[in-house]
Amino acid sequence: MADEPKKLTYETYLGLDKLLKCQELESEKAGNRVAEEHLFIIVHQGFEIWFKQILEDFKGVIDILNEPRISEQTHLSGITTKLGRCILILKVVIQHFEIIETMPPAVFLNFRKYLKSGSGFQSLQFRQIENTLGLRPETREQDQPGKGYKNALNKEQFKVAKASEDGDTLFSIAEVKKHCRHIDTNCFEFKH
Image (cartoon, rainbow, N blue to C red; front, side):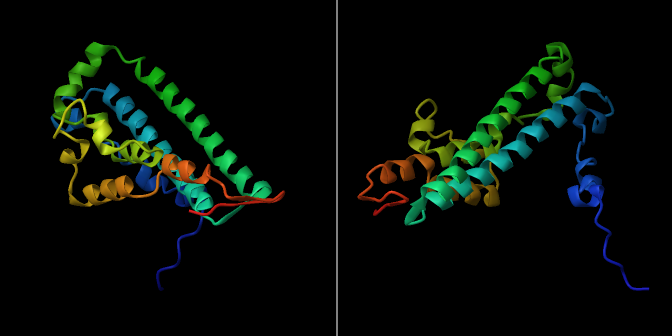
């Protein structure tokens, strides 16, 4: 009997078989399992999943703004929906910090040593969000010249980071679009 296609279920659609197995505790690997490390991983994975959605919405907004004509009714409502959702997502992310704060600092220190130099500051997607908003590398690195976030990235991640630095930003597009040359009652046409 040939391989049958996987039946689409809640679990297969969401990839839960993979998702729920990707919490690997470094403390457990070292033979000294600290249960709170599981919470730490889950919260940070939650950040990354939400960051992925923010980046998806930012891309959608940039795609709309890059169109030569923007219909107020169709396009602007899409922009406000996506950016409004990003604001709500960031509120959820802030709540994740409240969950982490339920972990006593001493417990965190019990497994922190196993994380070596790992840090949330190394989040590629967070840096992509900063880049897409318009934060320039020279601005970011004023505090620590030559110690940019890209130093900690592998080759593939570096390409992704560089592309987000070099790509369109919400700030740069907004700057261009505010110099509208033609307006009619139903549509905005931007020339740049």
